[in-house]
Length: 110
Ligand code: 5GP
Ligand code: ZN
Image (cartoon, rainbow, N blue to C red; front, side, top):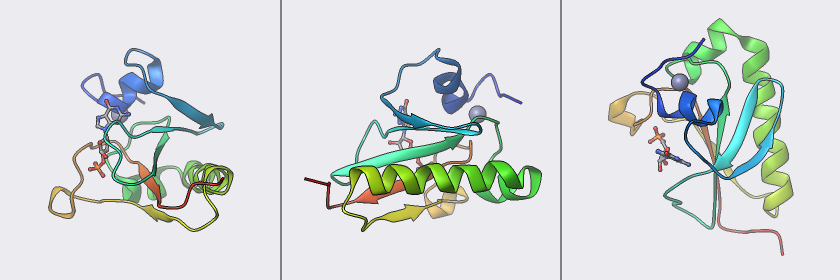
């Protein structure tokens, strides 16, 4: 399930490079190209779904896997204090219409 015009599908296929941080059965984690905080990692399901709500209904195990991957990455790279956010819809700031979570933290692990 991919979308040929989708930038995150291209990162997942390797067509566009990204700094991979971690991966799991259903998701990958890579650094945001335009970080908004000291730590800014994107957690992205391998399957193309337009937003996190669509992923939740279409493939619940993939949603759980994504949240577990993001939580592991956050505890590896931050002190454990972080935000895990899902912009959903353009008016909420979503710009890439392939489901993804943002891990944001001001406190990298020393
Ligand atoms: P949204 O605004 O949809 O919630 O988040 C999309 C995020 O994807 C933004 O924070 C943006 O900086 C990031 N982004 C957009 N294009 C690329 C890219 O080609 N590579 C990487 N690593 N991040 C990207
Ligand atoms: Zn996609």
